[in-house]
Length: 116
Image 1 (cartoon, rainbow, N blue to C red):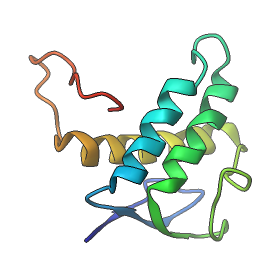
Image 2: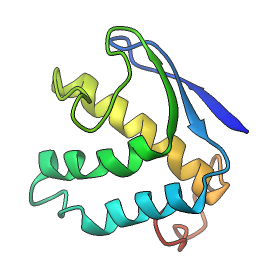
Image 3: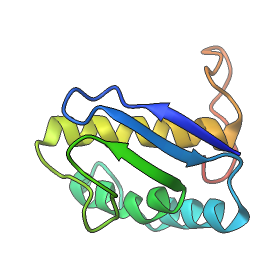
C-alpha cells in the first residue's frame, strides 16, 4: 500500500508517493538519518542535506513538475524558500506515516516515538 500526497509547492506542483506502511528498512533509514543529522540551529543547510537519504528511502515515486526522480544528490536546494517548503512538507508527511497522527492534539506532549 502507498500514500500519494499532493505538493503544496507552486514551484514544484505534483505528487509524491510515499511507502505506507514503511518497512523496517525504510524506518531505520529515516531514524538513522535523524540521529546522524547535525543540530539545525548550528548548520541548517547541512541538517537539510542530512535528512535526504532517509527521506528518499521512503519515497516510491516522484511526480513533481520540473525535477524528475529525486535523490539526495538531485534534491533541489534553490530557490531556498521553495526548497525548504518542499522538504518540510515531505518530512511532515513522513511523520504522519510514522506516528499515525494526522493532526496532533495541541494539548498533548509531542510524540515520544523514536525517529518521529
